[in-house]
Length: 256
Image (cartoon, rainbow, N blue to C red; front, side, top):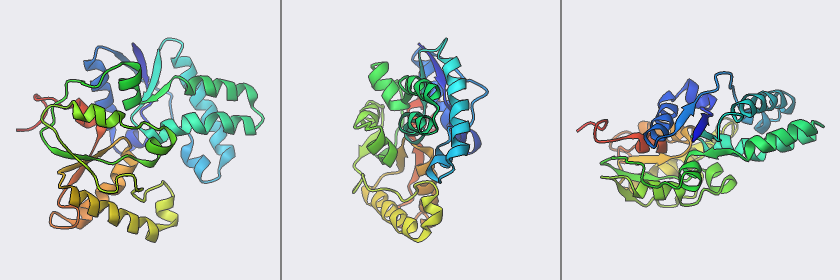
């Protein structure tokens, strides 16, 4: 397959290793990955904070870029349940509410061929074993958008179970939000901090060395809590890693 990468602005600005890992996994499986260079933010932040006019301009740009990419690509992939959730559940409706019916239809067509990484691997490519090796104890946090908007279910877990060397452990109260929620963490900082404290404690209780998820935004939030807790704190010294980075790891890349 020829697949267009929606890197996400968060990965581009803060964690480019996640976008690179996505490419590594797909190329290892024999697929061609292209990067539409004109892509920008999908507009999720703007929609969620009420800036609908500004968001509509970003949605239009996103549709233009990826509609063009899909003329030669079979699918679009993003290592983010949150951003794919926006493409699928916000773009079409936002365009329609603004009276842009043609844009709405085009947004729907792009959304129908846009996948979160675990969806693409399991549902479209029919793969669970991607040839990864990761010799660590890992727990999985199902982020809110991937769990509740995309309903990815156990797809990430199926991929993780196939990783050689991994010890996958259950995360207590896994489905509870980590407290990030984009601007929620800023507007409701005390509540967010309390939710994060619970998540950090549960990670510590799992005994995991690493906490993984399909959204870099939530992982950055959780990693901040783990770092502040310290190696002897409630998180038990655990750190975070994106699902794509685990799947990209091999015996050749993992330090002994």
